[in-house]
Image 1 (cartoon, one colour):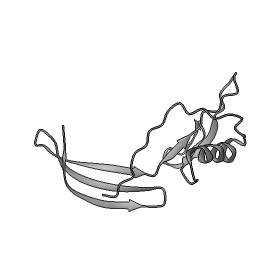
Image 2: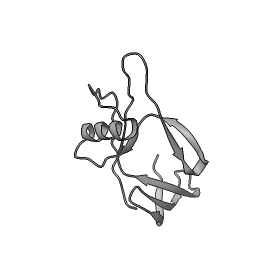
Image 3: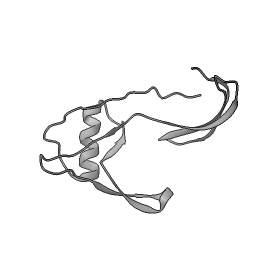
Image 4: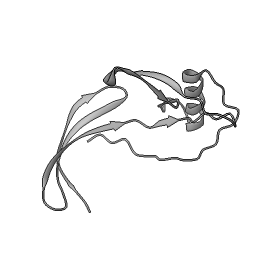
Length: 112
């Protein structure tokens, strides 16, 4: 199952993401257009003290509301462990005693 990209136009870009509009032909021959958000690698930390989880409250402009979330952020550090520790301290005011990696998904950031 492979879709063929006909064209890709960059619609928006900032330091956190690029948004493109891609024209494609599906494996069934249909022509479709997708808006695609390309983001830099990020980390999410699930703080657990052995008894409870810690969530943080973040204001999210697109929904004009507070959202309860686990601390997370872009990879602005040398490695994933340094990024996780920095985000945990920055967003939750906590220091990690021990980090356990339980999931990792790496995707290549691509400019279309």
